[in-house]
Length: 102
Image 1 (tube, rainbow, N blue to C red):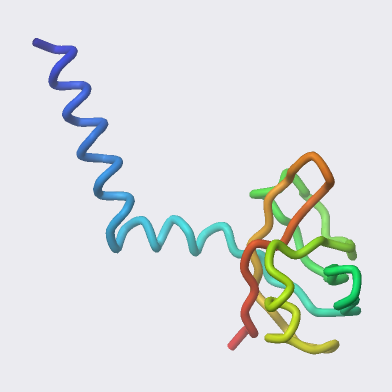
Image 2: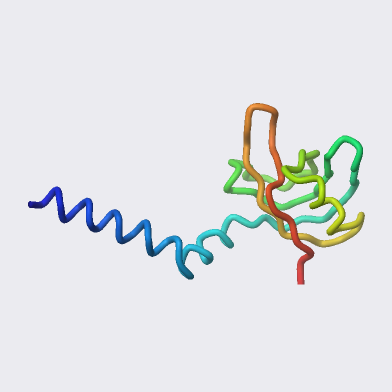
């Protein structure tokens, strides 16, 4: 019986994360930065940013990232303050979402 209760609790938690609470968790992964360079031809963006705990980076740095979707590069320009999400993969780090900071 305890196993069924644990399974039900896990399912409830998973469903709750997909609702409005899930959005709060997703926002926590955003990293603040500034666009330093855009290379549309290569599908890359150079970002200066603070610590990126979600990527295991404890220090501020400037890095070149690939972009998951090249249309993301059209949303920003050099000098823009941005918030972005990235993930680590086999080929390095990839920006999966980016938006101008408010």
